Structure formats: C-alpha cells, structure tokens
Amino acid sequence: MGRVGGEEVEISLEEVRDKNLMQLKKLNTGVFPVASPDKYYDYALSSGEFSKLAYYRDICVGAIVSRQDKKEDGSICVYILSVGVLPPYRGLGIAAKLLNHVLDLCLKQHIPEIFLHVQTNNEGAIKLYKKFGFEITESFTNYSANVDPPHFFALTKFIAPSQAKK
Image (cartoon, rainbow, N blue to C red; front, side, top):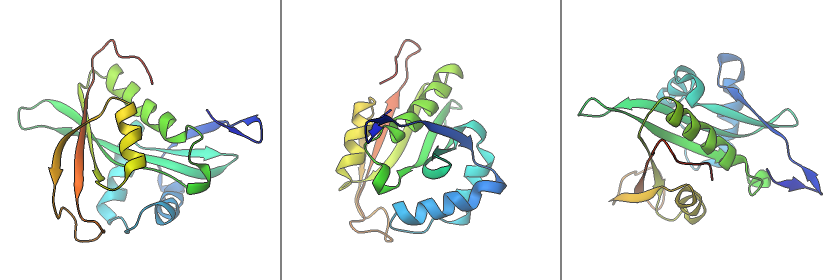
C-alpha cells in the first residue's frame, strides 16, 4: 500500500450490497465520464466476491466490478467491467489491491482468463494493466458513442496457476 503523510494507507475491501450501492454510484460519477446503466449495478450486486468497494478511513475511494462469463467453448473467464479510484487517492496502491483481489479469486477458482476494455487514451490505466500482465488483444474503433475518444482496446491476461502477485 502507499503512504499519506508518511503514514501507511490501510484499505479495506467490502462486497457490493444494496446498503452500499449508492456509494458505488457516487464513486462512479467522480471517476468515469459517463453514467453506468442499471445493468452494470445489477452485475455489481450479483457478482459476489468479484466486485468490491475499497474504503480508506470509512470513505469509499475505489471499486472494481467484474463478473464471470462463459465463453463460446464453454470455458469460464472473468470480465472486468470497471476499476476506478477517486483522483485524490490514486497512486496509493488501491487499484492494485482491487486487481490482486480478483486475480487471486481467478487463481483459487482455476479461471484461466480475465479481460477488460479500456479507452485507447487512458494511458495510466493501460500502464497499470500491463504491469499486471495484461496484453492488448484487440482494438475497437468507434466502440462507444458516449465517450470521446470512442476508441477502446481489449486487454487480456491468461492466468497460470504458478503466477505470483504484482
């Protein structure tokens, strides 16, 4: 974890539930350029351990929302819908803790693949995901009319049972 004023930052993770769903909604308005649809919040509530809120001193400062998906061949993978941390709390290892949580779940449940989409101009996020072993596997032009630029990358990580945390 990072440090604030020389003090080690303690971050706790909690499952997304009805009682804290509004905190996720407020966090998302401070992090993402567009509003998330209701289906996104349904996934956050129904994905159990795969979606978490990150708290620093009882303040919700970050979140990861992901879900298990079944591929065409019947195998299971995990799709990360979003990872977000409020700007004042970035650089403290919060996104890393959230990603490590989901990667650990994938290892424990023998899920070999995890993927996500990210805007092509989101260099900070791309750098973070590459640090965790994600690779750009696809490029989409005009993927979303709701954001500028509308271009996205798909990033994928294949998980081997012997992989260690970053």
